[in-house]
Length: 165
Picture 1 (cartoon, rainbow, N blue to C red):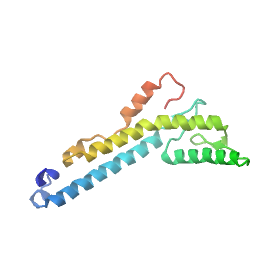
Picture 2: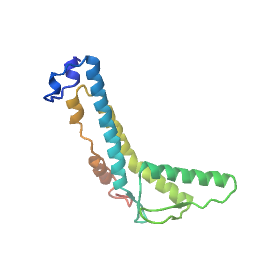
Picture 3: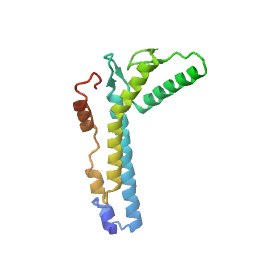
Picture 4: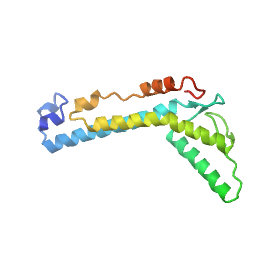
C-alpha cells in the first residue's frame, strides 16, 4: 500500500499537507477505531430500543447491563441453594417492579435473551473485522453500520414462536 492510498479523503486544505506513510496509517487506524466504536455504540443503543417479548406477553430489556445482572441473579440463586440459604429470585419486565420468579422460568428467559442477542453481537464482530480489513478511509466509510437486517432475519426465523420482538 502506498502512503497516498492510506488516507484518501480529499479536504481542500488537507490535500496539500504532506504526511509520512506512518502518519497516514495512524490516521486510517484512528478512523477505523472510531467506526468500530460507532458499531459498538450503535449495537448498545439498538439493544436498548429492542427488548424481547417473553411468553407472558411482557417485554424484557436485553442490554449488556441487564444480561450481566440477570446472570448474576441466577448465579447467586445457585450459590445460595448450594449453601442451603434462601434466596428470593426476582426480575422485572421493562418499566415494571420486580416480581418473584422460579429458577427454571428465569433461566429460560436468560437463555432466550442469549439466543436473541447472539446474532446482533455476531454482526457487530463481523463489522469490526470488515472495518479492520479496509485499506482506505473511503472503504471504512462505505461500511454500513446497521442492525435492522439482523432483527428482520431473527423475526423471520422465530415468527412461529411466542418469543418475538
